[in-house]
Image: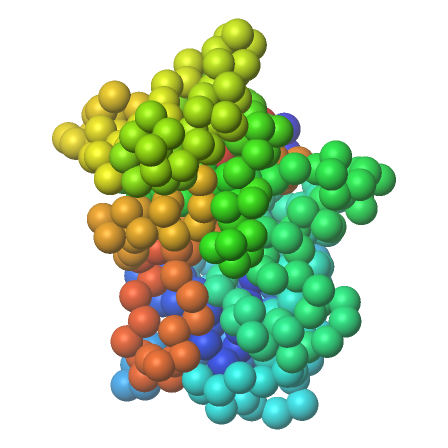
Length: 349
């Protein structure tokens, strides 16, 4: 099979996305080789100057097609121009033009991957508030995951209901898949239904089986304190989660639970490169799952979208407007996201 490049989206140009991309190319050329940036040449040249003000800047080259990235010299950052900015943006400030360009880059890169021109998609952080300011159609999506779901569904000529996706956060010690993503806590509780939990278990099983080369051992978190304590603190575990787990077991999945959330993540935490009781935890809502992963080390965390017909990863952090433009941003999570994208491509294809 002919080799294909990996597309990296610009992220919000007023945030740290361009900076961590430039640092990844500067410090990890073995990882960024055969990658290209979908974005804006001027923004990336500003980022290259920012990370090495007293050195020869990182070379930034304009390319016309993804395949050109396969023939770039080391530490040369190829950019495929998508859209434009009216002027250089102020770092750390919400801007509708920044949100629009960030979204346009995601759309272009995703469609390129869906067409088979790119092997995978790695997305630098965009700002959800800037995305909202960008207006239609971008403002209808709360984040990357929902936008990519819509693009993938449209490409496959399917409805959103027929293109279910889930977010997985992973680092060297823990993998977590979420039942619900970017909704309020009240809505997240309502989203814990038999069908949503069972669907999450199936997506987790299918995706992790491909990644691991075997069926994953899935541990399921309860929704309530102490997993409901036999119904004393809520009945979701008895009426919803446990029946979904039983159905998944009857379908051949290796699923256990529901377990008290305050101990389950420790039981799944890998040490010395070896997983503990579970290969992955299914959490009921966003913060339940993301807090333990990020506590273990946000600099190594990677976000993976499960259920798409393309490989998509991203760093496990946001646009960090508070340090944008200071040169302090850490590219480690982006570098790990690129590494994982390569691993997933090898496992999938």
